[in-house]
Amino acid sequence: MRVVFDNGIFITMEFLAISAESLDRAAEVIRSGGLVAFPTETVYGLGANAFNPAALAKVFEVKGRPRFDPLIIHIAETQALDKIADLSLLSAANREKLNLLAENLWPGPLSLILPKREIIPGIATGGLPTLAVRFPDHPAARKLISLSTGAVAAPSANPFGYISPTRAQHVRDLLGDKIDIILDGGPCRIGVESTVLDLTGPVLKILRPGGTPKEAIEKLIGPIESLLTGDSHGAEVKEALVSPGMMKSHYAPAAPFSVFSKEEIIGIKPQAGSAFLFFDSACRDVWIAAHQDSSAREKSFIRVLSESGDLLEAAACLFNTLHELDNDSPEISRISAQLAPETDLGVAINDRLRRAAAGNK
Ligand code: TXA
Ligand code: MG
View 1: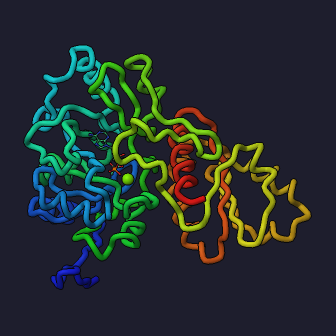
View 2: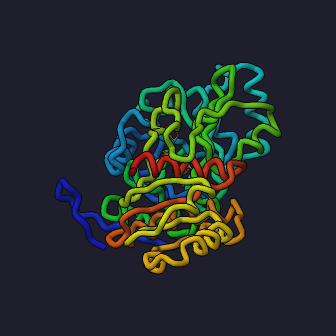
View 3: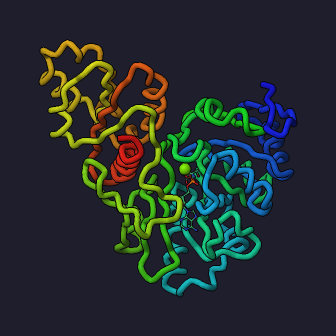
């Protein structure tokens, strides 16, 4: 595909399957300051050399992301941590917790906020003295990071405020004309972004619920705090104190979007162009039975995240389902979504649904 940048320079976006050659090529592009979208176990990331301020500036520009919203730095071995984070600034107790978390949950969908070293340019962290570090559990991501610069800044590869990409095609549709390479590694296994945990203060806090459930963290290091709560209408998603980029509204599809408990959604009447996103088929079946007589029901768009109500399966297809509903959106006038049970991965699923609702009422 041939595309033109604003400044008139022609570049060719390469859409490549994962192979030894494509990983070499992508690593070379990152080393020389270009942008590569790559798969991780959570969502696709938009990768840039974490040591290169000009490359980092391009990430903000391409995403339309505010400069104060810090990026996550991805590493491919625990030893790389010391180079970018100053662990001597952590309390002894927090250092011990870091070791436990890194030993047991890395590689995996957990980003840790730690004191930053000077070697990482301030633009990466929006001027903050801390940085988020993640060690992804995806072979291609790890290979790309170690072949390139050992530290790759990568936000989710979507325009700011939009639904995150869980397939290479989502990235192509959203940012294909603005980046150098898209590595296609198929659908992402986990499907929601990493959990962001702040390890810098006396009280450890989850700033963003994600692919690593709070329960798994607490099993290792004891009770932690969680900053995000909300009722089924998303009205109480707390904004205060949350990490800088965690906007209340995010992940917004084009059509008006609302979230409901299981009991509430059953009472929502189908209308022309209405779409229903059920968590499980049990709830869908009760809803269908309740609206048997409605002529609009047959014309409603109906999706189920997991027939059996499995949280892993639901998380894995959440963003793809939102992308699909969005692509059908000329005909969709409103999306009503059922919240998942509020445990394990359900917390992250509900956080994303509530943010989509807050972004688009
Ligand atoms: O799963 C993921 O984490 C994906 C994949 C690509 O690895 N990446 C991702 O990055 O979701 P992004 O940029 O979309 O989200 C980064 C989140 C933001 O909410 C940001 O505010 C927070 O991490 N964050 C980054 N650095 C921080 C810091 N120093 N202090 C507080 N929050 C920080
Ligand atoms: Mg994001």
